[in-house]
Length: 152
Image 1 (spheres, rainbow, N blue to C red):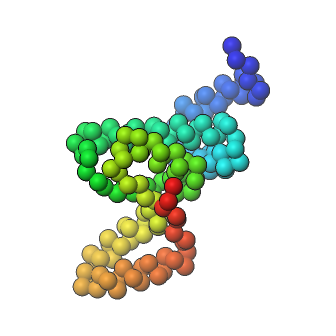
Image 2: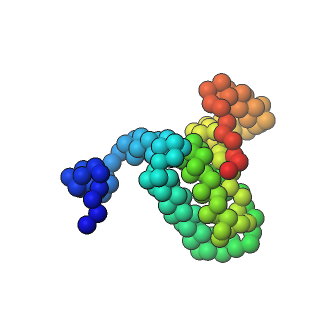
């Protein structure tokens, strides 16, 4: 039996917590903490990000295999908070993805998904002014968000 520094009672509560359903905001808050600790070099946090990035890359591989997309070059746009905000996670994810699917080119979405949703709606409302609408939305969004760097 491994002796954990934080005690078996805390470990039991942690396991129970991990198995219970939670609001996405709770999980997102914990993910931010893990990402911050990984940036500081915490071994457990680094392992969590490495393993979770490998799991997602494996899921991408399964989808590529299922759809028969082998060898075709596609961009793979990431939009989740870990992919967008954690350099450690992104670096591991890109490395794992390159192992099996070097033909996929991972990029991080420069804007939050809501911007794409807004653009689709605006273009449906005023299709004749697509260029102007796109430019105005981009200008407006820049006032609130800074685009992410898409490099690993």
